[in-house]
Image (cartoon, rainbow over the protein chains, first blue to last red):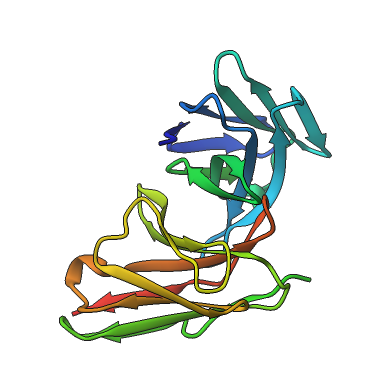
Length: 114
Length: 110
């Protein structure tokens, strides 16, 4: 089955700095790569996703890049703010017959200090 | 707005009890999932269902079963709760891709 590795497990930055979280996946058939943000005590929520036919996607201060050859994808957050502090999960999936399951990385705790 | 709800936010049960966790979604999604979340281990898939009365094992199904009698409802059952099943349980529903999570049930087995 799919295996997703995520690094680093914790990341501390100063407000205004950039943050990068990296994930690798094992199954070359995976074609959908979402990123979820989970604030303390809350449910995970999708913040951005990318499909295998796209190399990069951007939404305001967040961007995701995908390298299919190397089987890795990364989340980039620019101009970090204290409210970006949360646990971030990457995931990978492949769709079969109308459904797909997600395999999650173990998460990165991002702490943004004012 | 997609709404996924879970029957309890906190639950305390004794070892050996039968435990039911319920999840309801209101968006007519075909697919529903149960995960457990443990510190340092991320989200691990227990079971999922892509249709009424259909179920598939995830990565860690041992000690759990599920039921999906109606499209909107997916139940996780712990037949005989054990202390190693103390965890946060998250339900999710989806169309083929994006998953929407419920608020979670923190289960403590003593």
